[in-house]
Length: 113
Length: 122
Image 1 (cartoon, rainbow over the protein chains, first blue to last red):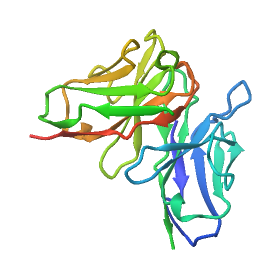
Image 2: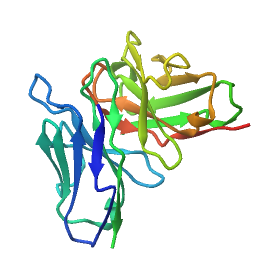
Image 3: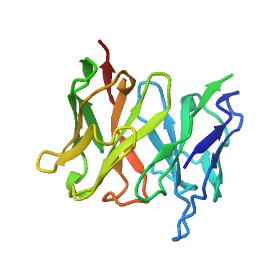
Image 4: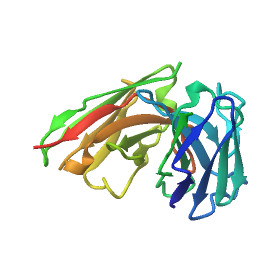
């Protein structure tokens, strides 16, 4: 399964919204009704951090300015008001394939204007 | 809190072997599946392998199948990645990550370590 993110680079002013798209080559909708699409943020010098799982559930401790949406093959990560600590590279990741062959999008670099 | 600490990286010549370790703490290691993921310089994330909580099941990416072996020691809370026949293109930061459950797919990783750098160069 190939994941295609857009844009690959994003420059946003503090307090402004941001949106990242992730398109899958195959549907990520599981028979159980969940879309196995996750979003991670990788800040420089830190381990990747899980933000969103099964397309729209926020991981523990993740601020509510982050939200995920979408189903099937099209997904979106939105940041309602960008803060300085949000800089880094955002990745979508699919975890649906069985046997496992997890794959990541190319990454979207978020910078502050 | 969940903590994952990788070690074992370094500079190694092409064709040689290296073993990475990942020590886990802050959770019941023996109850969770684990993963290895890498990031080559200037590139994105690449999933390499996973292992079930009881080592009963392992899966590998095609790029490392037959060369890399994932294993674990639940008595020591340690995950391993044995890498052999290393290539220049294996140069990357290697991360261990916890599975959100015991290891069965579909799934995802919920916590990651800081990573350890492996450089394959003559």
